[in-house]
Image (tube, rainbow, N blue to C red):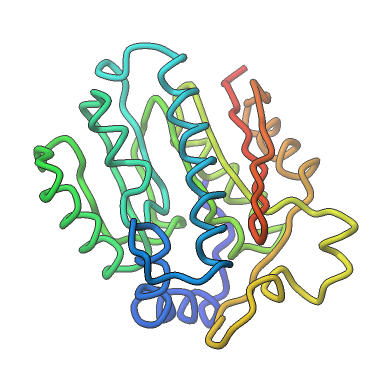
Length: 234
Protein backbone atom coordinates (compact mmCIF):
# COMPACT_ATOMS: atom_id res chain seq x y z
CA UNK A 1 0.00 0.00 0.00
CA UNK A 2 1.43 3.36 -1.01
CA UNK A 3 1.11 5.89 1.79
CA UNK A 4 -0.19 9.42 1.42
CA UNK A 5 3.00 11.40 0.94
CA UNK A 6 4.34 14.11 3.15
CA UNK A 7 3.70 17.48 1.50
CA UNK A 8 6.36 18.30 -1.08
CA UNK A 9 7.28 21.57 0.59
CA UNK A 10 7.54 20.01 4.03
CA UNK A 11 9.54 17.08 2.66
CA UNK A 12 11.94 19.53 1.00
CA UNK A 13 12.30 21.38 4.31
CA UNK A 14 13.08 18.15 6.18
CA UNK A 15 15.54 16.98 3.54
CA UNK A 16 17.24 20.38 3.37
CA UNK A 17 17.51 20.61 7.14
CA UNK A 18 19.12 17.19 7.50
CA UNK A 19 21.53 17.86 4.65
CA UNK A 20 22.92 21.01 6.33
CA UNK A 21 22.43 22.42 9.82
CA UNK A 22 20.36 19.47 10.95
CA UNK A 23 22.98 16.98 9.85
CA UNK A 24 25.72 18.79 11.74
CA UNK A 25 23.61 18.95 14.90
CA UNK A 26 22.19 15.41 14.86
CA UNK A 27 25.48 13.85 13.80
CA UNK A 28 26.97 15.28 16.99
CA UNK A 29 24.02 14.12 19.08
CA UNK A 30 24.23 10.58 17.71
CA UNK A 31 27.92 10.27 18.52
CA UNK A 32 30.22 10.34 21.53
CA UNK A 33 31.24 13.94 20.90
CA UNK A 34 31.48 16.17 23.94
CA UNK A 35 30.47 19.15 21.80
CA UNK A 36 26.80 19.03 22.82
CA UNK A 37 24.73 21.08 25.21
CA UNK A 38 22.61 19.73 28.06
CA UNK A 39 19.48 19.37 25.94
CA UNK A 40 21.32 17.56 23.16
CA UNK A 41 23.00 15.24 25.66
CA UNK A 42 19.63 14.28 27.13
CA UNK A 43 18.22 13.64 23.65
CA UNK A 44 21.22 11.37 23.00
CA UNK A 45 20.47 9.45 26.21
CA UNK A 46 16.78 9.10 25.36
CA UNK A 47 17.39 7.97 21.80
CA UNK A 48 19.94 5.42 22.98
CA UNK A 49 17.35 4.00 25.38
CA UNK A 50 15.03 3.47 22.42
CA UNK A 51 17.75 1.82 20.32
CA UNK A 52 18.78 -0.43 23.22
CA UNK A 53 15.15 -1.45 23.71
CA UNK A 54 14.81 -2.44 20.07
CA UNK A 55 18.07 -4.39 20.03
CA UNK A 56 16.96 -6.32 23.12
CA UNK A 57 13.59 -7.13 21.57
CA UNK A 58 15.15 -8.24 18.29
CA UNK A 59 17.54 -10.57 20.07
CA UNK A 60 14.67 -12.08 22.04
CA UNK A 61 12.75 -12.70 18.80
CA UNK A 62 15.29 -15.23 17.53
CA UNK A 63 18.33 -15.84 15.34
CA UNK A 64 19.30 -12.50 13.81
CA UNK A 65 21.35 -14.16 11.09
CA UNK A 66 18.26 -15.82 9.62
CA UNK A 67 16.12 -12.67 9.40
CA UNK A 68 16.03 -9.70 7.05
CA UNK A 69 15.66 -6.16 8.38
CA UNK A 70 14.64 -2.76 7.06
CA UNK A 71 15.82 0.27 9.03
CA UNK A 72 13.56 2.99 7.65
CA UNK A 73 14.96 6.43 8.43
CA UNK A 74 18.30 5.07 9.62
CA UNK A 75 20.04 8.38 10.29
CA UNK A 76 23.73 7.78 10.93
CA UNK A 77 23.21 4.06 11.60
CA UNK A 78 22.44 4.16 15.33
CA UNK A 79 20.41 0.95 15.03
CA UNK A 80 21.78 -0.65 11.84
CA UNK A 81 25.41 -0.76 12.90
CA UNK A 82 24.99 -2.48 16.29
CA UNK A 83 22.39 -4.77 14.73
CA UNK A 84 24.94 -5.87 12.14
CA UNK A 85 27.56 -6.32 14.86
CA UNK A 86 25.13 -8.61 16.71
CA UNK A 87 25.00 -10.90 13.68
CA UNK A 88 22.21 -9.69 11.42
CA UNK A 89 23.32 -10.58 7.92
CA UNK A 90 20.78 -8.60 5.87
CA UNK A 91 19.90 -5.00 6.68
CA UNK A 92 18.46 -2.49 4.20
CA UNK A 93 18.94 0.95 5.75
CA UNK A 94 17.74 4.20 4.22
CA UNK A 95 17.37 7.87 5.06
CA UNK A 96 15.98 10.90 3.27
CA UNK A 97 19.30 12.69 3.87
CA UNK A 98 22.22 11.78 1.63
CA UNK A 99 24.53 13.33 4.21
CA UNK A 100 23.20 10.97 6.88
CA UNK A 101 23.61 7.96 4.57
CA UNK A 102 27.17 8.99 3.74
CA UNK A 103 28.01 9.30 7.44
CA UNK A 104 26.36 5.96 8.25
CA UNK A 105 28.43 4.31 5.51
CA UNK A 106 31.58 5.93 6.88
CA UNK A 107 30.81 4.67 10.38
CA UNK A 108 30.16 1.16 9.05
CA UNK A 109 33.53 1.14 7.31
CA UNK A 110 35.24 2.52 10.41
CA UNK A 111 33.63 -0.28 12.46
CA UNK A 112 34.99 -2.87 10.03
CA UNK A 113 31.58 -4.08 8.89
CA UNK A 114 31.24 -5.81 5.54
CA UNK A 115 29.46 -3.52 3.09
CA UNK A 116 27.18 -6.35 1.95
CA UNK A 117 25.77 -6.81 5.46
CA UNK A 118 24.28 -3.31 5.63
CA UNK A 119 23.13 -1.69 2.41
CA UNK A 120 22.60 2.02 2.85
CA UNK A 121 20.59 4.12 0.42
CA UNK A 122 19.06 7.60 0.24
CA UNK A 123 15.27 7.40 0.06
CA UNK A 124 12.17 8.88 1.64
CA UNK A 125 9.85 6.50 3.47
CA UNK A 126 7.14 6.77 0.82
CA UNK A 127 9.44 5.29 -1.83
CA UNK A 128 10.53 2.24 0.17
CA UNK A 129 9.67 -1.17 -1.27
CA UNK A 130 10.64 -4.79 -0.80
CA UNK A 131 9.80 -7.44 1.76
CA UNK A 132 11.54 -7.96 5.10
CA UNK A 133 11.05 -10.14 8.15
CA UNK A 134 11.18 -7.05 10.36
CA UNK A 135 10.73 -3.35 9.57
CA UNK A 136 11.89 -0.73 12.09
CA UNK A 137 11.24 3.01 11.99
CA UNK A 138 12.60 4.98 14.94
CA UNK A 139 12.03 8.65 15.79
CA UNK A 140 11.01 9.55 12.23
CA UNK A 141 7.25 9.97 12.67
CA UNK A 142 7.90 13.27 14.42
CA UNK A 143 7.89 14.73 10.89
CA UNK A 144 4.42 13.34 10.08
CA UNK A 145 1.04 14.69 11.26
CA UNK A 146 -1.46 12.09 12.47
CA UNK A 147 -3.17 11.14 9.16
CA UNK A 148 0.12 10.81 7.27
CA UNK A 149 1.71 8.88 10.16
CA UNK A 150 -1.15 6.39 10.18
CA UNK A 151 -0.86 5.97 6.41
CA UNK A 152 2.88 5.43 6.81
CA UNK A 153 2.28 2.70 9.41
CA UNK A 154 0.17 0.86 6.82
CA UNK A 155 2.83 1.37 4.14
CA UNK A 156 5.63 0.04 6.33
CA UNK A 157 3.44 -2.84 7.52
CA UNK A 158 3.05 -3.90 3.89
CA UNK A 159 6.83 -4.37 3.76
CA UNK A 160 6.97 -6.46 6.96
CA UNK A 161 6.49 -10.22 6.92
CA UNK A 162 6.34 -10.74 10.70
CA UNK A 163 7.37 -7.72 12.77
CA UNK A 164 6.94 -3.93 12.65
CA UNK A 165 8.57 -1.68 15.24
CA UNK A 166 7.91 2.06 15.35
CA UNK A 167 8.54 4.91 17.74
CA UNK A 168 6.91 8.33 17.91
CA UNK A 169 6.44 11.29 20.21
CA UNK A 170 3.19 10.49 22.04
CA UNK A 171 0.40 13.00 22.40
CA UNK A 172 -0.12 13.97 26.04
CA UNK A 173 -2.07 16.82 27.64
CA UNK A 174 1.22 18.29 28.86
CA UNK A 175 2.73 18.42 25.38
CA UNK A 176 -0.58 19.66 23.97
CA UNK A 177 -0.16 22.80 26.08
CA UNK A 178 2.95 23.67 24.10
CA UNK A 179 2.67 25.26 20.68
CA UNK A 180 4.69 22.36 19.35
CA UNK A 181 7.12 19.79 20.64
CA UNK A 182 9.82 21.89 18.96
CA UNK A 183 9.52 24.38 21.81
CA UNK A 184 11.14 21.74 24.02
CA UNK A 185 14.36 22.30 22.09
CA UNK A 186 15.65 25.81 22.91
CA UNK A 187 18.09 27.40 20.52
CA UNK A 188 18.17 28.58 16.92
CA UNK A 189 17.64 26.77 13.61
CA UNK A 190 14.94 24.24 14.51
CA UNK A 191 13.72 24.47 10.93
CA UNK A 192 11.26 21.58 10.68
CA UNK A 193 7.84 21.00 12.21
CA UNK A 194 7.49 18.36 14.90
CA UNK A 195 4.32 16.41 15.62
CA UNK A 196 2.98 14.43 18.56
CA UNK A 197 0.78 11.45 17.71
CA UNK A 198 -2.15 9.69 19.34
CA UNK A 199 -1.20 6.12 20.14
CA UNK A 200 -4.73 4.85 19.51
CA UNK A 201 -4.52 5.99 15.89
CA UNK A 202 -1.17 4.28 15.34
CA UNK A 203 -2.48 1.01 16.80
CA UNK A 204 -5.67 1.21 14.73
CA UNK A 205 -3.67 1.77 11.54
CA UNK A 206 -1.49 -1.24 12.31
CA UNK A 207 -4.60 -3.34 12.97
CA UNK A 208 -6.03 -2.39 9.59
CA UNK A 209 -2.77 -3.65 8.06
CA UNK A 210 -3.04 -6.97 9.91
CA UNK A 211 -0.76 -6.32 12.88
CA UNK A 212 -1.37 -6.32 16.65
CA UNK A 213 0.76 -4.85 19.46
CA UNK A 214 3.18 -7.33 21.00
CA UNK A 215 4.96 -5.07 23.50
CA UNK A 216 5.69 -1.42 24.07
CA UNK A 217 7.67 0.98 26.21
CA UNK A 218 7.87 4.68 26.93
CA UNK A 219 11.41 5.98 26.81
CA UNK A 220 12.08 9.42 28.14
CA UNK A 221 14.79 11.75 29.25
CA UNK A 222 14.54 15.49 29.73
CA UNK A 223 13.52 16.90 26.31
CA UNK A 224 12.94 13.42 24.85
CA UNK A 225 9.68 11.46 24.82
CA UNK A 226 9.26 8.38 22.65
CA UNK A 227 6.60 5.69 22.63
CA UNK A 228 8.00 2.45 21.21
CA UNK A 229 5.68 -0.31 19.98
CA UNK A 230 6.48 -3.69 18.48
CA UNK A 231 3.71 -5.16 16.33
CA UNK A 232 3.39 -8.73 15.10
CA UNK A 233 1.41 -9.96 12.12
CA UNK A 234 -1.91 -11.46 13.15
